[in-house]
Length: 236
Length: 339
Image 1 (cartoon, rainbow over the protein chains, first blue to last red):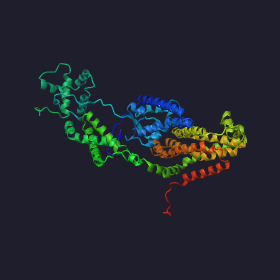
Image 2: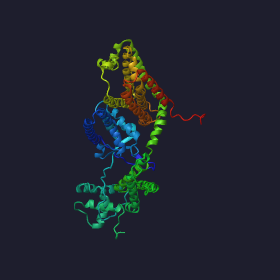
Image 3: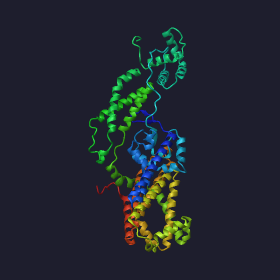
Image 4: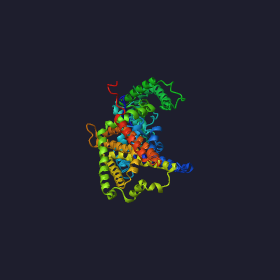
């Protein structure tokens, strides 16, 4: 969570160790490829070739992540491939100073071997920061958060059987938003919990108890439509 | 107000914000300031004031939608929109030549002086082991073997031995270049490690400083005792002004972080470390610049055999004077008498 000067909280979705390890492996492969490219160029360069290789080795090791994070919207190629992004704690684009800090402190994360401190730090924290992130005030996030909620499926709007509190309304609307990603059985099972809300309405509509499968879900979808403000023309 | 009406009334506004963001994001951030993006179209047709007004309205809508528990899909859409606008509006744009100049002329020397207590500790951590080991080695050359192993010692001896010049083939430009590459890779990595070691309560930095001090002290003591003093100091003095300063500075930056971790004062521990890292950043810029300069000098000047050692010593003394003057006086505000 990051708070803006306007007083709203932006939710950031931190990236976990698995995604970051995969991104790191892609970056490592890219670095190795760059290194081979430099070695190949060396043979064409003659004298200063050795210097070129050594300088570029340094650049690949230390400058590569900084350059990409600053120039390419906060993501090295590996992070980009996995949809990750480095941002400040405030959700703003990463600044040069912060990018340099987090990438130089990589040397501390690496100790004692194979990024052990970095991984331990990531696993101990809810926002998966490694030591460099902690000191720089940066965080690695999923650039586009996954959305489980779609548009509400269409249904004939039905008034609930009793007045609903705000929390109940929110629960029913979120349930309806996930209709597309849940199985019909699970949807119905969840809808059965809300029978006190739909039963009265269903009985008024149909005049009899809805016995067929999916009846609860259909009725509750109608209530959800009613809650977000859709009214049948004739009912109003 | 129902969610459907809310969306119907405001979606035109959201779309306008989205389109404005699309246009702004396509403009490269600050190339024009560097004099590179002169030919590019500037976002003249996008009204920045209108955009920020739209952004504030959108923030309002987001709070309302959250407070009224509107459908999560709607809230997420608003969140994504405000997030994009937030990134765009609050991004920092003061990078470029002017910022670099201010950094070099004012901020670096100022922040070095601001960290003078850490600098003092770092200097002591470096100099005391260097002097002790140097003196011990001078008295008894065998002592150097506590710090270096024999092949290393033999290599240094052959580098500066007076008889070596005759035997060694003349250095070629190619060799100078490859040494430059080696110094860049090796020394800068060392400097950065010295800084990163600070995260372990400063112990890492202290260790690197003391170890480097002892290492250099051992070599200096050994070669002085061996009678190669002139060659050695002529070689070391000039680039040492940059390299030793850089190592001590990066150690001081590391100690600053370590101290914040151990004794955070009135901040939370994590906040203290962040604050310290931000403060130490100017030092790290200096470390980087100094080490690049040092590598260039070491590769092309220190090893040049056509320059008599006396000239090198004089240049080295000059380099130290300039360096100390830069760190000591550059970037101070004008005194009242002068103003």
